[in-house]
Length: 120
Image 1: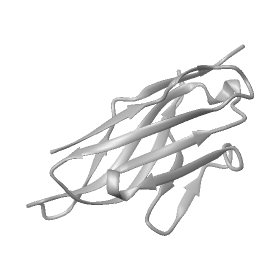
Image 2: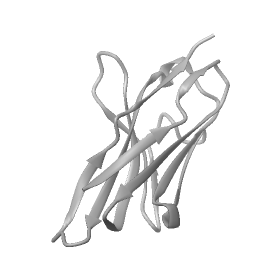
Image 3: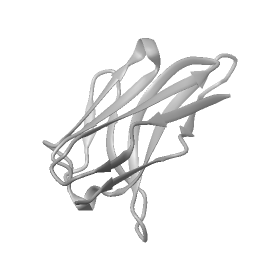
Image 4: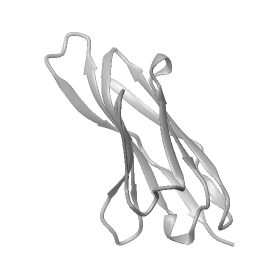
């Protein structure tokens, strides 16, 4: 099994910055995609950003403000969020496609979520 543990959420004023981290642990052989999703109250979960070894993808609403990165040696993905807006308020979830030792394929794992609130 694998686990994803997020950290770094909190309350920030509009225009401020936060950095989210997500560390994967367990019997991990390889990780392909890692990414961040978010879900605001009453809305569907949406992709914020994702990263593979050679590409990144961003939602249009965060382009130019958020940066995703990963440290493969630490099995960790980061989301640097700047110029935060009230509409960025949501629970942010980490996601990863993980191949475990002894497994035949990659499986999708989710973190428990971390709250980000942007408010003055």
